[in-house]
Image (cartoon, rainbow, N blue to C red):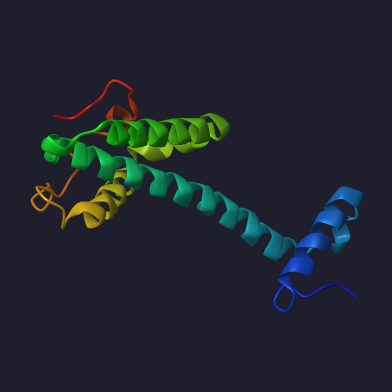
Length: 143
């Protein structure tokens, strides 16, 4: 008997993979399988957003807390840029996301929520003062 999507997701996924590999497509749970594939795409977009939030938060700190800048902060910004760029190289269609107004605004608001209580970060603007493309540039360091 086939595993139930609702009652044993782990077994259901194993069976779906088996039937896909075997070519026995008639046994696939196409509706749930399509939902899971859509969810995988959403997860990729969410991961990109969280990485961009981290980068924007670090850049906001860099800009506003110039007296505290250190090698560690620079390294964290560089590492986050590297992780984002590697992700975009593996999934180039996500690059379009970086210019979507809602995505950019959501990323900035989440970044603000991370830094708003920190010294000199309480009065950051409601919209990002730089684009995500700028934020990803290795030579971009806001002053």
